[in-house]
Amino acid sequence: MKIGIDAGGTLIKVAYTNGDLPEFIKFPISRLQYVASWISEFSNAKICITGGKAALLKTYMNQKAVDIVEFEATSSGVSYLLARNDIPVKAFILTNVGTGTSIHYINKGEHQRVGGTGVGGGTIMGLSKLLTGITDYETIVTTASKGARDRIDLKVSHIYEGSEPPIPGDLTASNFGNIAILASEGQLTKEELLASVVGLVGETVATVSVLAAGQSGLTSIVFVGSSFIGNDLLKEVVQRYTVLRGALPMFIENGEYSGAIGCLLYL
Ligand code: ATP
Ligand code: MG
Image (cartoon, rainbow, N blue to C red; front, side, top):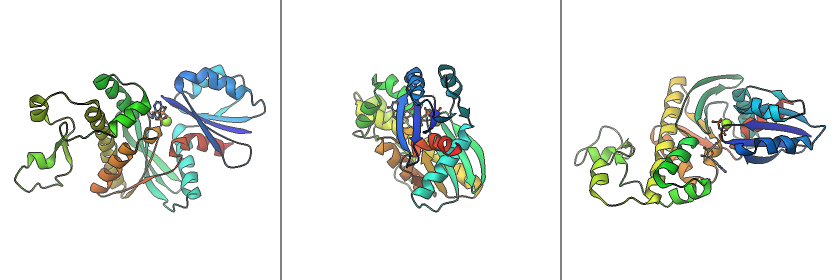
C-alpha cells in the first residue's frame, strides 16, 4: 500500500493505492489525529506527506513518512491528472484555490511560484459566517447558487450608465459596491449575500490568475483546490471571468487531490 497525504489548512486529502488507480478520501483538519490512527492500520504502507499541516500530522504518527514540498507535489499531481484525462497542455498557470490561493507557472519540467492571494476558499467560509451566520460548507454552496448579485455588486455598466464603457460593461466595477441600492433597498437575502461572496472570491482568483498568465506569456490556466467541490457557481464565475479577460480556464476532475497524488507518485 502507498499513501499520499496533503494536509492543508482546512482539509486533509488522501490518495492511496495498492497498485491500481489511486483512490481518494478527504477529512476535515479537525480529524488530524484520527487520520494518523487510520494510517497506522496500514502497517507496511509507504507514506508521503505534504501541506502546511504535514509536520503536525507527523507528530501524531508512529510510522515513517517522507515529506515533500507542497508545490512540487501539486504540480506533479496536476501533470498526472492532465495526462490521464488526455489534456495535452504543457505550459500553463496553475491556480490552487485552497484555504488561500497560490499561483504557479508550469512549463514542462520547469515550475515557479508566481504569487497568490489571501482571497480563497477560507474567505468564502469566513465571510459567509460573518454575513449570514452559516458555517456548513454544503449549505453555503447551495444557498449561494440560488442568489443574484445585482443588488450588491456594482458593474462597470452601472457606472457608465447611458454611455459606452471603455472596458466590458459586464465586468464588476466594485464587489459589494452597489452602495446606492444597498442604502435604499430592504434586507438582503442570504442567497444574495452568499452569491456575492462567491462572486468576490471567483473574480479575484480569476483576475490574479489572468494577470499571472499575461506576465508569463501564457493563456491556459488550470484551476484546482477543494473550493470548487460541489461549487458550480464558483466554477462558473471563474470560467466566465477568465474568458472575459482573455485566458483559457481549465478544471480537472479530482484536481483537489493533486497534492496527495503528487505525494503518491513520489513513493
Ligand atoms: P491550503 O492549501 O490553503 O493550506 P487546503 O489544502 O486545506 O488549504 P483545500 O482543501 O484545497 O485547501 O480547500 C479548502 C476550501 O475548500 C475551504 O476553504 C472551503 O471553501 C472548501 N471546502 C470544500 N469542501 C469542504 C468541506 N467539506 N468543509 C470545509 N470546507 C470545504
Ligand atoms: Mg492545499
